[in-house]
Amino acid sequence: MNCSVKDPSGNIIATIAMSDNGVLPDTTAGDGKYSAAVNVNNISCLLVGNYAIDYLALNTSGLYSNQIVSDIIVINSANMPPVITGTNLPDSVIRPLPGDSLLLTISVNVNDPDGICDLKDVTFVTVRPNGVTFPPIPMSDNGNGEFLFSNYVSYSTDPTSYGYFKYTFTAKDRSNIESIPVTDSIKFVLPQ
Image 1: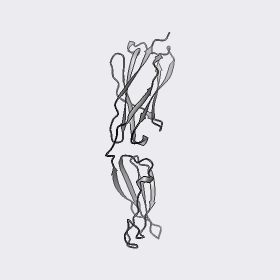
Image 2: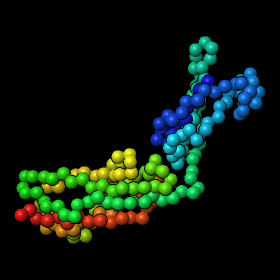
Image 3: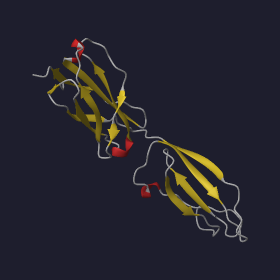
Image 4: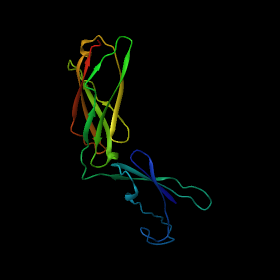
């Protein structure tokens, strides 16, 4: 009989053979009760959230049992919020001429005292020079605490497309605790 452990993202992080051998946590050998010990120290990234344990038995005739699933909720009672440690935005960008575009990539560095795997998402909100605010935009995680967003900047005749665009970044961990927001800006200027 085996059991598999799935993390909150649905990834199988361990497959464990269960036995009926009377060794703890099983107390009586041969009683038809199978058990196994799951050691969380072997899990390299213990995420906060719901873990699923799937049980499946195979008999001597090669037939499988129905699958049983139980859940274990992992919380972090000493959780610390993530911290945005730096932004990487150009000071200014020259808007392209008509028919042209420019790929602009912005990034932020984020750290989490509870480990990089505890980061859930990073978003930013953009405020145009005229005060119009856009909804939060998600950034992509490169897996090392750097979150990126790339998009094309194109030519515009709209006067609100020039001046300082403010970007406010926020990080969230798997316990839904948010970082202190960090704001930076880019000045968009007319082509010469």
